[in-house]
Image 1: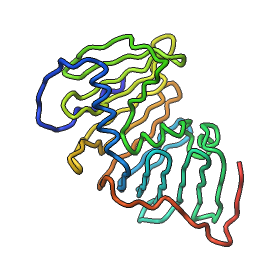
Image 2: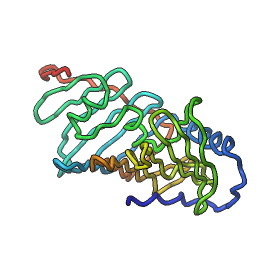
Image 3: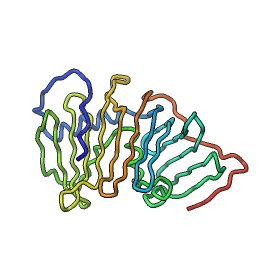
Image 4: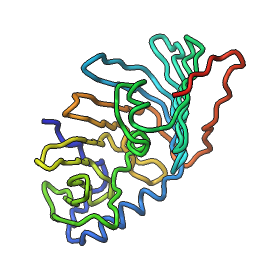
Length: 242
């Protein structure tokens, strides 16, 4: 069983008397204060076929742009990933090949062995997991181990959130199938204060049924600075469209 993430290190108030709507409002208010994320650290992808890790440098502009520079051992530049809602592009620096396609789960899975939707990838770098829809039904609301617990039922299963009630940050998220088994788990921990905003520096997304995971560990992380989410392909690069 994957453990839940730790709550952020922040002054403990321990008032857990808010209603569900107010908890959600405060989490969304905190999320809206984050416009851009800029940072570097280590990224690890685990799968039954193969696992690997390396360093990264990320530029994120909400709500729809991500640029990821990936490096291997000794700082060797491995690739550049550009991701938007309309298109993704991955440039392999070693082979001088650019792969371009739609940012759906199947094409990204073919490259990274991890079937994640666009928003799930973006959330892995921002730590923003709370997204109840108007059609979702709130099934459970309470407090467990000092964290607010909310469960929503929707067409694709049950969405479960555990929220720190002092910083109003989601520390864990689970998507449960019809049998109550998790098909996706997201964990956030190692919180820090940046510009008076609690932000996780360790994020992990797990697909337990497929035995796959993505872990993002920030070393340096900055918020609401200028970011660069564009990349110009070298003239001689081979382009493959998927």
